[in-house]
Image 1 (cartoon, rainbow, N blue to C red):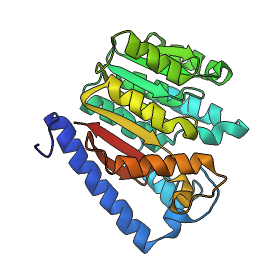
Image 2: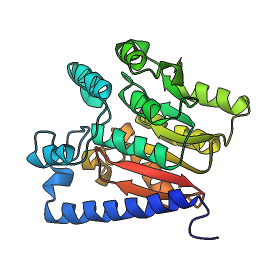
Image 3: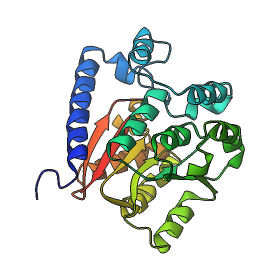
Amino acid sequence: MPLFSVPKEVAVGTAMLGVAFATGLLAGKRYPSLLFGTSKPHKSIIGKSSPLWQYILDHSLREHPILKKLRLLTAEYPWGKMMVSCDQAQLMANLIKLIKAKKVIEVGVLTGYNALSMALALPDNGRVIACDINEDYAKIGKPLWKEAGVDHKIDLRIKPATQTLDELLAGGEAETFDFAFIDADKETYNEYYEKCLRLIKKGGIIAIDNVLRCGMVLKPRKDDLATQSIHYLNEKLVRDARVNISMIPMGDGVTLVFKL
């Protein structure tokens, strides 16, 4: 089998991400505290109060003004730290543009910052199937989806994500999606992955968040089922012949899975 039996754009993107990953590893060797400075889970490997974090944002982030408004609004809540990091959301949006995606799945919505980011990257006839079990958080973001003019692209489905994914499969939508983002309950990650893999077409991408658990994957506690589940999936992915992968030290770690 060729190294990349995927579109040229995806092959180029994979190579670029490999360079980014290697750079992250070198930075981690020189400045180990940037990778595993604390044992408590959080959404960013580099502390958000770090000058280096601000440098990254100042020299890479191109955030839509309504995205920024939703990010700042979400950050006002105690649970706001669960939101995907803005630089990571931008990477997802850039990948969506790179592969010219039209159909996207999001497992775990919160206030919809990343759903909005992806919807902005999609063409006008694109759609995001946004899966969550709690509509209260999403209600915060919905008015901003409308303000950005992309609410028609976001199909919010309030029910267990496994049920929504099964419904999509039963409806004949296997191998019709271009991109999926998984950032929900960690204990169910493997099931989300398998269902999304069936729904994603060849050459499509699955992004899996929180794959480092702030370093706790190095030695998962017996009572930490979430980290155990993440570690299990990480071990599985590195051997999964159905895909190519890149694990990137961004946010709390994200693995990009490229379906062969």
